[in-house]
Image (cartoon, rainbow, N blue to C red; front, side, top):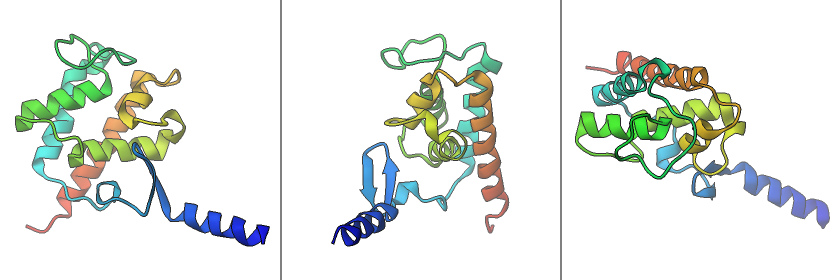
Length: 150
């Protein structure tokens, strides 16, 4: 009976996905890697890189929000870039999801609750890691755009 119970738990967990909302059954649409991207997503990622200014405008950690900051953590840079490009912030915008996926792929151990904030604040995260995540997200968005039928 115990083995059957453990097998049931293992099967259940294999069908779950870790998200910022905790462990959820199945894969929410916003966590699917096949999300559609647009030129807007490319612009958001490029603007994010510009805002971080090669690390000169990057800050580690999380302070109270993103308004009126002179230096940006990764989350605030993405938020500001989104507002600049789209006129609004959309939490699950494809550009931001691609950054989250890059964090999952290369730095999964550096977040537990909020990927963008936890990764940026992690003691092992340096600006080169933030650059690597943005580069991977840019590469994916550019690849998806290149393969998009006209």
